[in-house]
Image 1 (cartoon, protein in one colour):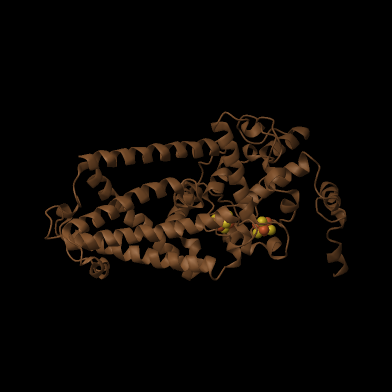
Image 2 (cartoon, rainbow, N blue to C red):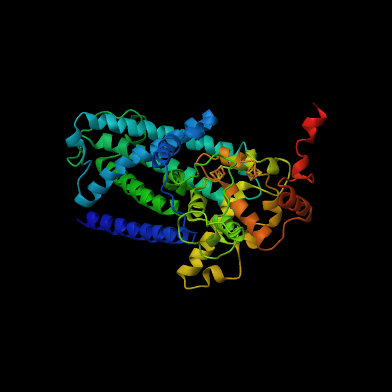
Length: 435
Ligand code: SF4
Ligand code: SF4
């Protein structure tokens, strides 16, 4: 009974803290501008199935993809076992599903053990890749001590949690037939390798080991679930809504801001475009997070910090200051700053800071070639380019602060409808000359 009360207490605290953090995340994402996304639901669900569930884009690099798949499948499937942990913890039972599932139970347990080992192997490889082979994309400037520590904590925690499952099963196996609380579950393949390490222990000590691993694992899982909400690992949940709400338009199709379109049409004496009500007069482009759409803010929390975007970015490759991963990390950091300030009654968005200026510089956004390589590379369909373009629009339209070299191009577009200085009427002169 004491154990059940203790479990309910731990579970209650975890649920309270996780709920509080989830509400914080939802409030912060809602700081973004409204963007009513209801079109092409079939395509959107296809993205969720192929890209989020199926990890389709990860498989462009097969070896990390397979290892990542083990961690992902392990996370999804082994956590089914957590359901049994919770039932056992609340009801005071032990291996609640064993009598119900009969001979299927050991098959499932062996599958969980296989995945536990696969997760450990994948995590060790990822740690080696990051910290021994030191892949450059994990050591670029924006990967400061916290993102590196975050990645290491996640990988090490997963390894420790998997060990706890295996030791728990090993001690459980030894207790079966010796203690009435431990029913027969059938042979478990991987944890059987650990039983020699525990074979010398008496029943009391084995119960202690089994209970310690059980509590360690469930508290670890609950703590890890809370930690995830503060970490880049949040992508394991947010990749699903993010892929659903991702842009479906052809890459490179730059959307005119409705407010600009409306203004130009009214200047030309045309009917306003679209049937909806006129948009609120606001800022052109984005200076801070509340000028970005809510789905751009969602994507900042969905970023895995994998750096695939930055490693494909031509501006970054040629030594420019731009890193699309940093753009996403900066948006998320600014969201956290504003969200925390608002949660504590602070100034929030009116704190005298802004995304552009305090986090992202003009030099960074001006280096972007709008090539979409980052969008193509992203395994969870994030578009750093959308954010860069919004920030650049703000600089161009609100501050007239684009680089002086660009002014000639703007002028040409205005007068010649093309970036070059030739009049539109001369556009086909080349064809005449070559006739
Ligand atoms: S669109 Fe911009 S940020 Fe993205 S890869 Fe191209 S240059 Fe880099
Ligand atoms: S934006 Fe996408 S590709 Fe870039 S770091 Fe984040 S998840 Fe990786």
